[in-house]
Image 1 (tube, rainbow, N blue to C red):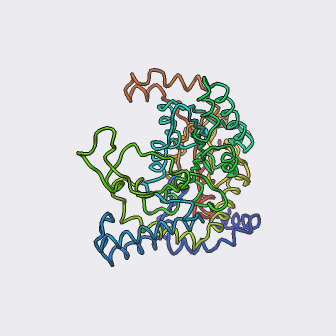
Image 2: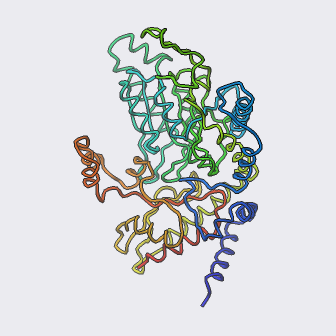
Image 3: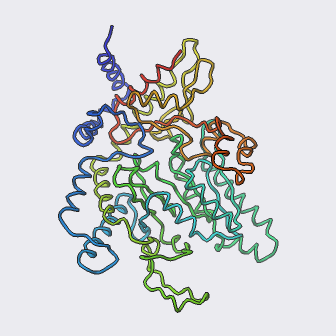
Length: 492
């Protein structure tokens, strides 16, 4: 009987024969051995890169050396230690702009705690009013969905861009039609000439928000949507958090107005630091509704009278960075970007897509003894137009979904790190599982009168999502094959 090692070796040879370009990514095997040895030493199969990237040993070593060798102070001063810290922060801003090929004349880098912090900044500062319009892709992280609450509170028109429930996609033409129809609808429904002029004019603020890559299904949405929306007079928020760890985003070629980033998703360390890349010509629209330490050049208590604001904001980006930055961790961002640059996003991207394509094909071949499929896959079945995230459920021999918790328990026993649930993306989940509006609305009926325990009891058994596997910088064939071997145990 062929042993596991021998079998895996033959499987790998067949894999290389099918995906010869994988051999061109061998530098990442060397990187795994030298910088991520803890994975194989501990027998870890890490398949949750969309949840969080992994850091290299050199990132920690280089950051520790930087902190060890000098004295750094709060940058909100002009003393020597503060000036040194300010220089490192500005060097990091420049490194971020360079990594995304963004012109200093076009973009600002605003440091935030994470992508969610960047999205909240846009939501609370965008000039929503009763003439404004917000279109959100239904394939969005909850941190993007939350922007609708600011728009709704201001009386803005809010619409969702629905997904095709089979492909979990939308296309450029569909988006353009929806944006155009919203403009036409606003013009015909205005109640007076002044409103009509506003709807036709450039003073109407219109925001489109969609992800470059779904954190739920791995679908990549066309970046051409950005310029198409601009041509129709819309500002664009491009959520790039799930996209940039394995794909290049060239901001000299595509020009979204707002791009939220979480650096821990790109290279694992540091956590607690993200940024908002913002086009300067759109950034001037944002209006801070409060001010804080670090955002103002001058503030007065006695001068404030309700008409005078009593403060003077610093220029961007400082006016958007509330309080004291996480300044000791910010230089670690530059170190992480240098690691990705050395490896090459094209190399990382090729590796993860070879693994993704192989995994999808394997999942679709898994069967119960009665011929019923073992796995239900959501989203694209090929490489084209997708990233390295794979979303699926395991089925029993009757075609019913096996609890994701049961799959997680088995994965844990094999030291496999994956993720289950709706992944903070309810719209994509609802499309993938064909959940209806009436059914979902029933769960939220009288929600404000319920305790948390009562609400959880109401939705018990109704929170099915999917099993998400995502590859990253040092994923390898053994990781993918170990997952498939674990899933075979569910076949009846």
